[in-house]
Image (tube, rainbow, N blue to C red; front, side, top):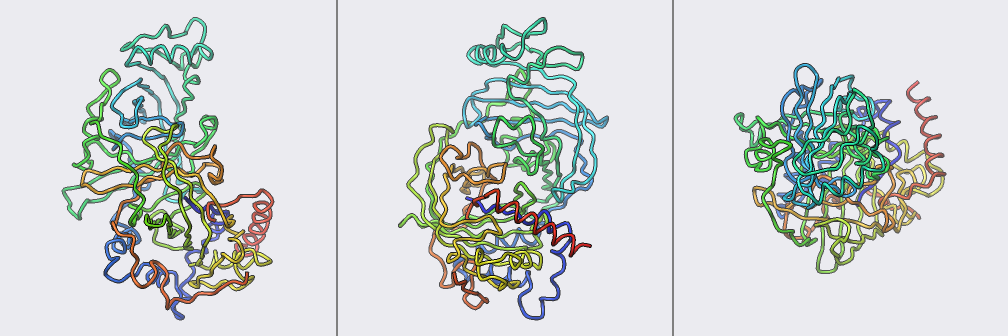
Length: 511
């Protein structure tokens, strides 16, 4: 479930999102509008508090340029597109060299190691990313890739997978467990790593965050975000990251409740980490769930989410608050969507996953900055609310116009979703839903259903009962009814027209 968009990359180049103080006098500044949209009576105070905590920066500091020297480890069993189940242990040294361990598993809880890749190379930080605000671009060079199998079954499987792409004098096989094999070396020879669809392009984009847990100066946590992995495995070798994977934590300053961190930090290629076994939780879509951090999407999107599930009638509501900055302080627009969802079915493709079908039949949009408002007013015809009627801080119902073409949203819309649920070390329930396709499309067909997950949401209320005032949409806030996506139908014609219009806008308004 997500709302893709075409607009923000071009708009942000003009710095429009910083220019809204003019609207403060009429009570429709983006800050005030957001304050209203995040105000509930006491019944929803926990959800309100958590979202406002994120909007206020959550006491996170970002290092620019980042200092990545040290040992960084996964905080849990990670699910990559494919699916692949891995944990990571990366060391970056003062002389710009690195050693990366990628531990691969046959199960979704990382209790059954299959094989380990050991990658050595050199990394050079470049400049701040002009595409992903808050990120830093880097170049890397691999010196050597080695592999160790941990079971005979995996040894046979890798031998079969690599025999087509790796032959000749340097062929590493026949494979046996607990023996180190060389897949590639800068000294020359065949690159056997291609048989594993291996790439380390995640090192091309990174970001380091620091925060003190519970405002305690003794509880410093450092996190390293590396670039995302393309959702289509066939594109992995050619993809330059435009978002992030789950964060690694510094092995010396990690969350003390992170059991996986301690296990992974003590492991090596001959002693892979084995995480504690845990049962798969039944995915129960009920109650309210919110983002735990400012989330990043491909194509320069920053947002927070708030979902409400009504399990008594299988309906849902989603609030999406979009921002122009990586700490979610400067709002650009919000989207409210609602619809129905199916009963969950266990996934036969992704171990531990549950499949749902979501339908969207109602949507409202509220621009919160001049950039988005101007763009919405550019489009001719009633394809996104009433033509030329958009104002900062004023919400419109775009259901009568079948969505909003400017945002790539068509209604009604269907998405094929993947969910899983976990409990963290503090007993809180976490809800993961499918990773958005890297190409900006939506999972509107069964074959496009995700095989990996987004950042988890945390349950902020077990009840889906809303206060008397609709969550995130105050009755006293200005609202217009149009005369009349979810997830977005990205037709190539719409994109082409939008990009031409936006380029003209940028040249005129930035020039």
